[in-house]
Image: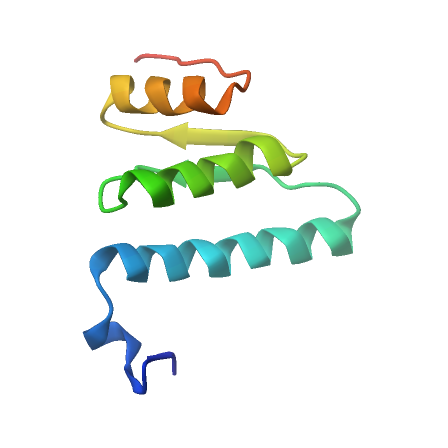
Length: 98
């Protein structure tokens, strides 16, 4: 059970805090897989930015795009938001519209 300030995390945390914890757990799982397999697995982030503020979005993208050595697929419903975030990171990216 996760807690925040002595309270049950699920009922105390904001939606952004809950999503941030979920990402932290998934990224820890990603790191364990990479360490145990000897190569980075494909990381898929499906519509993850909806409940995140700009700072949390930037931190997540910085890690997956600049610190991560594997391939990342990101889906988002707002092309401009994602494009602007990538440009702020000064990272190589490709946007595919379907």
